[in-house]
Length: 133
Image (cartoon, rainbow, N blue to C red):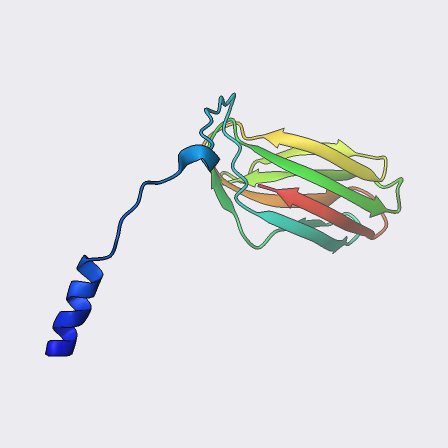
């Protein structure tokens, strides 16, 4: 008990000092919009001829938010639709025929969205890249 009392007194009698604020930087930030990255997903998908691949997870997103897709695929002359399927099963996509995509898709309305890629060609296609929700 004596030891406990001594420890308590020692803690209460600890010296205090002034804080030197010469190294503290205070800044005000101006924002023009909200940029929240919920997830980054790496793509390494093979899509069968005339097939569609859909991600196994969806995200609840608000109107005006964006999804960025950056990917390459081969064969380069294949026609692919990169996009998002909403909770009503509507596919919001960008058609690409050049072997690569670096585009942003804006979410049209609040809801759950799932990444999907549709292969419109008669050959299997290998897609690699990244998607940021």
